[in-house]
Length: 226
Ligand code: BJW
Image 1 (cartoon, rainbow, N blue to C red):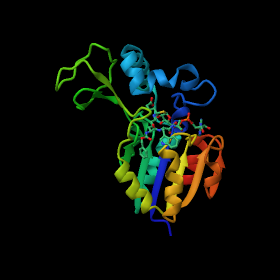
Image 2 (tube, rainbow, N blue to C red):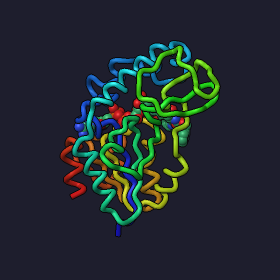
Image 3 (cartoon, rainbow, N blue to C red):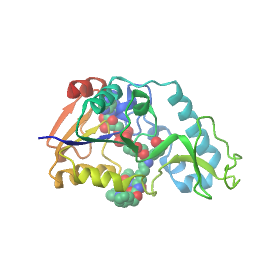
């Protein structure tokens, strides 16, 4: 019997809300070098470029709306009597805006800032500039509160505990190419969970899942939740 569910989402779940994925044709990493905009070294080299990149994504996110997949997951959460944790790799806030409450953003949040000097984090939705100062220590080291390559993702302890207790693990709209998220399917399977992938294309780890359904998230997720 399924009691505890862990759901992992990636950029594919927000694609039909108009937010670009990373590795699909025309995706963000085909237009920007990830070394320049998604690493601490890139930020140190050219903070202005990185802040421009994330300020533009804030603007896109503000004008986007949750889609049928986000809404179906929020409905599942409110109807599900057992344990449920939604782990999103996405930095957008569309799951929250659809009504999901039991979620963690393992790669951080677009609408928040982090001071690279003192570690203070605070909500912030507007454009960011290299001259912006931290409200706590006044350093001009303000960056988006997101997890770049080489940095440690957020909430790993909570995620590990949920995976260890999972009866069902469902991965939605992610290419399975970025660790540690790409390893969650194996972690859940080791704990005895059944595993299901809902994705447009087979992910890098597709063969690791017990079952898979292919198609757009706005069709697959409502059909799975129903
Ligand atoms: C649809 C659809 C539709 C489209 N419907 N589907 C082990 C082995 C090898 C390397 C490593 C390793 N461990 C760590 C590394 C290094 C590195 C890494 O993984 N590198 C790989 C490239 C190999 N990882 C890290 O550095 C991470 N930190 C770390 O590991 O710390 C140490 C540690 C070790 C062990 C435990 C714990 C910690 C940090 C990774 C940070 C990633 N950051 C980014 C940017 C965040 C900010 C931002 O958004 O700008 O996160 S990169 C980017 O990729 C973003 C995403 O969250 C992430 C995943 O992308 P996602 O969501 O899968 O998107 P896509 O575009 O790849 O795929 C979309 C999918 O959707 C496709 O499959 C489509 O088919 C599908 N799709 N439309 C349904 N309508």
